[in-house]
Image (cartoon, rainbow, N blue to C red; front, side, top):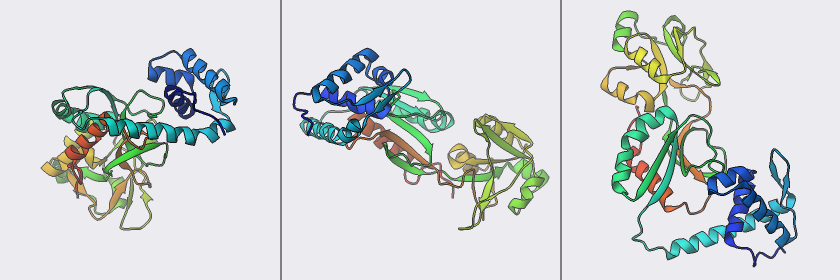
Length: 311
């Protein structure tokens, strides 16, 4: 059995971080130290336990079989220490210091930025960093404490707090419907001016179904294609055509009548898999106080179901 009695806790935390990130430089950047310091600490750890833990080359750091056998016991030690620290904390302690929040661009602009002032008011000791990007963010590799993301949750390497499921709707303005009428079935979509979002993976597919029937893709010849959702939404509000967007993006328009929901008997989507709106954070049994504070605040702010959801 490997003897960890002479190993300090910081070394164990560095080991976990390197194992998850498979990189000295990424861990160093996140911890605010040099890559050589992380590499040296891991080398000393290997010498202390008499086992090679990582294969190193110029492009990557790969765990050995010894590291894979050691990671679960080391995680258990780290989690036990975290539980002990938490038990010692005064319950009057409030969130403080830096908390780094990351969110998708349009979702962040509509639902994080407008309400983040309330978070700051509730916890004046917090220093908040909000970064908006649609790129994939790995909480083990990036300097982010809470990451809001929309998608299919499959990665067990992090925890997630789901706020709700993303629901799509086909919609158009009253002015467009007055001129062109409304499609009565999905087959009629091809006769209408459709405004289609195209991201880095290509143009969104328009999928519809009734009840539990399979999803059906309805090909379109778009009247407008854009990589900017706001531009498409503005065009739809101006009467140019139909859009297929999630309720968090246009729920207020559907509720105030500036857009009208179409094909109400059908479910709509751009992917066949369910998409969740969630906050994710590194896999830890007890998330830090700042992380819990942010997530709890947005659970309260978004509501159940989320305030943007349209039936």
